[in-house]
Image 1 (cartoon, rainbow, N blue to C red):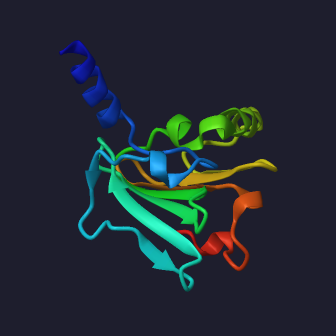
Image 2 (image 1 turned 180 degrees about the horizontal axis):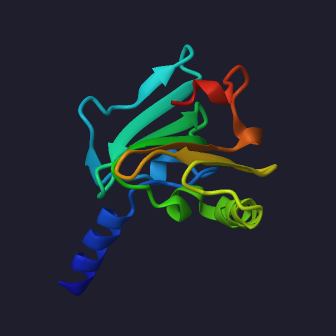
Length: 147
């Protein structure tokens, strides 16, 4: 009984795979209408949309190999960046610390590290942003196409 409850909790809390991971490990808490994977650029990119526990819509971008190379979000709460960024979270935090040390505000920011870029902003209850791995963007997919 306890193992069944723990398994259920693991499914509920595992909302997304992380950047650089594969889509097969991802399980959405709730899906937005019409959220089956959408193919873009003649099938070169797959986009899956979900809604996190805070009501924020998150788009997951994956290559044809299934590697997640980007996330975008929009909604009333910030997504769990640590979970989305995974192994790249430490690099983002290092860049964010420099950003803050120079007197800049992270409420509207762009933290660009060689391995990960995170842009976020918006007024309270209306957050928008995106994060991507520059080295993992498929050929012909510029960051401006991620929205």
